[in-house]
Image 1 (spheres, rainbow, N blue to C red):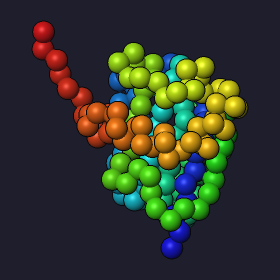
Image 2 (spheres, one colour):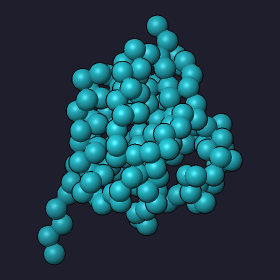
Image 3 (cartoon, one colour):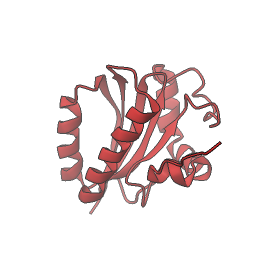
Image 4 (cartoon, rainbow, N blue to C red):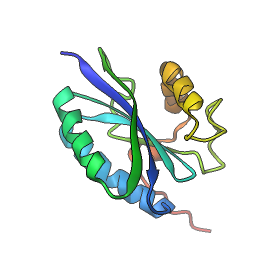
Length: 151
């Protein structure tokens, strides 16, 4: 059976702190693990780009919940296709917060997540983007583990 992959963008309705983003990811990972959904969430300057993969019915259910979620607006699906395999296997939800200066930008994303040309470029280069994220996200970013740093 084919899997479905969806990429969408949205705008946060409130400013997301690092704690808010971690809480969102914690909840997403719990539900996605139950529904066997994988993917990645990219955050930059109050905008989100999320790529989700899973069984078509499970993604339909998730999309219905996402459309009702008041934490974001301007929900727009930018790619919706059937695929043979996952790009984000074993990721209940990885997170790339590109507001964090310690993370390098994907080439072309420096201008933000609101530019339609950037979105088209990202979708066309999705395998390259997935490889970049796999290679550059830390274990903590993939698994959502916070590390206390004692000074």
